[in-house]
Image 1: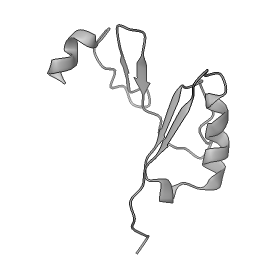
Image 2 (image 1 turned 90 degrees about the vertical axis):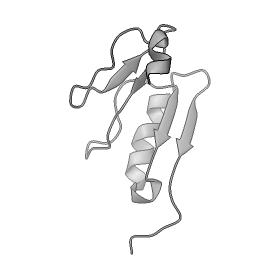
Image 3 (image 1 turned 180 degrees about the vertical axis):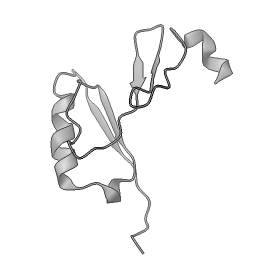
Image 4 (image 1 turned 60 degrees about the horizontal axis):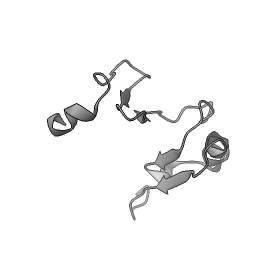
Length: 85
């Protein structure tokens, strides 16, 4: 990460539940773990969902509205080919 240090606006935030990285160009990366309340919250331009096979349909229904304010929203779904066994 040291090679990108000049791009950072400030030090990465590591506070529990508030992990984020802010860039000088105005971009920001936030980590949001799935919770029982779903993904409701601030608006997003990009949504990256890891471990897709573990996610229930309710989560995706709750996450979709967080992209509505973006002019060019993107969703990236990641998973492996395995199963629970």
